[in-house]
Length: 316
Image (cartoon, rainbow, N blue to C red; front, side, top):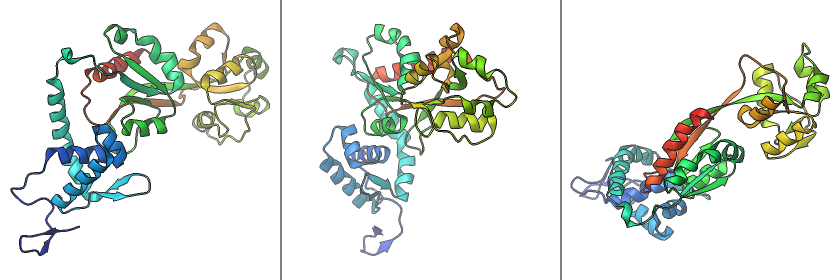
């Protein structure tokens, strides 16, 4: 859609007519749809109905004389001008939302629960044991384990406030802060470690040892092989379980070898229940990121939880 001047002829203007300020509510609605990637998710984030959001976006498009979103089978894709508009309004609108939220009083009622999500193993091993200070301050927490991709989709849809992601989210709509680095280690039960010994070519020696893995495609083990041994791993796992605690339990029991995050098996390595098969100078590292729900939350406990996690992660 293109602009028309007062005589009805088209021109290439890039915004609304001078003297016709845009409604802030329309811009807030636009930003919510832009960040979440769908009218339905944007409506949920704002507490509006989906038809209301659709109407507001169409009104804004008419005022701007620009198409903002391309409708897809699943959600919407921002048109080029939408990226420009979002870049211009995101900081002012978020700052305004922060000021508006700060005017509320704690006496207005208890804060809403903080919805936190992330990998089950990291939550259980590192996050949950350190939440007592937040609970003592009256923070109510709702914890959800899961895989990063669907959790980030739920974050965009407003179902979570904070997500611990195993990778940095793509695009500019989600802000992510580095949380911690997890080191991956190659481990087996002591009996297997004694049988393997210290061969010159460890990768080849392990071909005779059953492989225990998180998934059939060996995502963690393949990465270790590429990074440390510089070769592609071609193996069929003897046992798979989509739970790293379960994988660890099988390896402790003597089923074979695997690759685990060091934080998850530090206790077993210290006690001797697991043996470190290899100690490379440059082990594989994966960075976890703390991702916050788009926009500025009116719940002060979200920021409190975020800051607590960033501080606590230094000791994980």
